[in-house]
Length: 222
Image 1 (tube, rainbow, N blue to C red):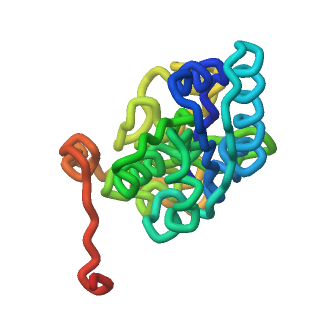
Image 2: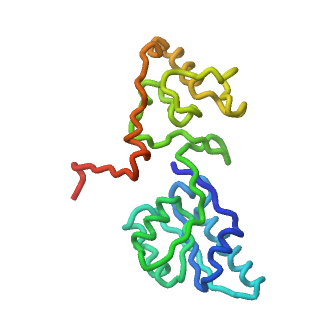
Image 3: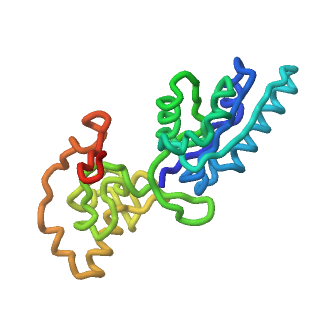
């Protein structure tokens, strides 16, 4: 899932100052799960904007609405009437949703209300952990299901560096050494000898280093 957190309310309030009719648009997918941009947060944000404007002596019309998914054009149609009736949209979706909104409603302005952070998993209540950088060349079958690109601070492919101690990364004692976890898994499945094979430098051309990426599935294209 894509993980993010709502921008500071004062930052959002300042961004919508020039507008009179504001729609706060929540998303029912990832940002709902990480409790940053679902229906509850959309209503809270709309209320905060309304209260702030009233206190400033500048009443404004603020509405909130949530659609199932902001990253696909077909779902955006569900909110067309509300969207087109507003002067500006504050999207509580991830950065993909904000950009999709601006593509689909190109005559409208959609502003981001979320700081998109990473792709990860819910570790425990209120805690999310980064698991994947979307590098385009997955090696999880070689590292027993633990990503060395995202979970090693140096994205190393041939084992831990000399800075890790007691299973922790030199970057922070609060951060597990990704390669320590990988080695433990290799030992558990009697695959430690796999470390004897030296991996070549990673081909980063499949990652964002080569510019915006596109995936095409010929078998499902129309």
